[in-house]
Image 1 (tube, rainbow, N blue to C red):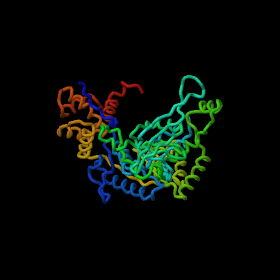
Image 2: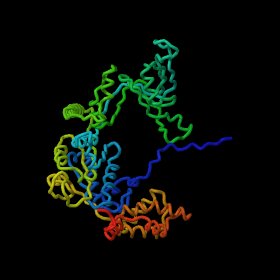
Image 3: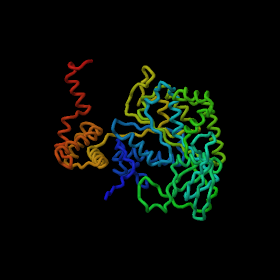
Image 4: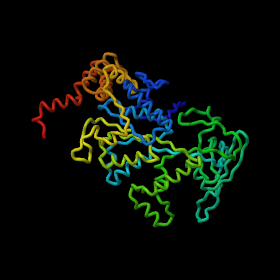
Length: 456
C-alpha cells in the first residue's frame, strides 16, 4: 500500500535582505514602537514616514517628493518598503535605482517617465452584463473539419452554470472555449463570462468542493447568488504605463507584412509624448464621468545621486505634472559632485533647487542594543538558533564594523555550527567565521599597510 504526502504548493520565496519588514510599526497615534513590524529603532524617521503614508492616503501628497538620507546600512530602503507595505498591494509601488536611466536603447528621460507612469494606478469601475456561476458541465461539440482531413474542429461548446437561484445551459462560440482552456476551467469552478467581449474570468473553486482536499494553492469562493445572467460591477486595477504600452503597439493584421513588422521591431518601443497626452485626456474624461479613480502610487528611486543634471531638471517638470506619483528618493552620500557637471558640489549630489522641494527624512546609525535586536530578528527570519553570548559578540562587532557585515556573518556561522554538530550558533562560531571573512574597514587597513604590494 502506497501512501503519498501531498506537498504544499505555496511558493517558497528566498529570504532577501528585507523579508522581515511587514510595515512601519506605529501605534494608533502614529508613535513608533521601538521594535515592531520588522523595524528596530529609527523612531523619528518612521514617524515621519507614517505622516507621509497618511498624506498619500488622504490624496494630499501628489507632486511632492521625500528624501531618505543617511549613512549606509541605516534602513533607508527598509523604510521605503515599509511605506509600500502600509499602503497595501492596491497602491502601485515602483522601485528603481538611479543608474537604471543609463540605457543604450532608450532615452534617460523616457526611462524616468516610464517608471513615473508605472507608479500611477487607475481603478476602473465598469458595470458589465455577465453570465456567472459554478460550472456543472463543460462539453465541446465537435464537427468535421471544413478543410477536410481526419481532424475535427470544435463547432460550439455547451456549458452549464449554477447559482443559488437556478441553473442555465449556454451554447458558446469556439473562441470562448479557447479562453476556458487558457483559464484552466474545470467542472466545479466559479467563473463569469462577459456578454459583450466573451472574456472568461475564473474566480476560484466553488466552496462545495472545499472538503475534497485542502491544497493551499486553491482559493475557494462561495456559490454566486442571484440569476446566472446579471449585471455585475467589475473593478480593474491598471497603471498608466499599462495603458501606454497597450496603445503603443499597433494591432497589425494577419497579413505577412504586418507580422514581419512586429518581428523586426526593436525590443523597446519608445512611447511618444503625444500618445501620453491622448491617454491622459481619456483618463481625465473617465475620472470626470466617475468611471475611474486615480490612485497615485509611490516611485522609489534608490541611489539618487547616480542621476545627472539633465534627469534632475526633467524631474522638476515631472513632479509638477497634474498626474504625478509620490516620489521617494534615497541616498547615502554627503556633499558630493552633481553628476553631469564638472565642479558643482551639492548636499547628497542633488541640485539645491530640487532639494528645496523635498521633505528630508534622516536615518541615524544604530546603537549596540538596536544592532542586537536586528540580528536576532534576522536569525528568526532565516530560521537560525543563536545563543545570547553569540548575539552580544555580533552586536559589539557591528558597532566596530557595519550592520550589513554582521548580518552577513549569520549564515556562515550557522554552517560552522552545523559542521561542529551543534544546533545553536555559539560565540566560537562567530569568532571562527570572523577570522575567515574581512569587513570593509579591516580590508582597507590591510591595503594601506601593504600598499606597495598592490598594483596601482
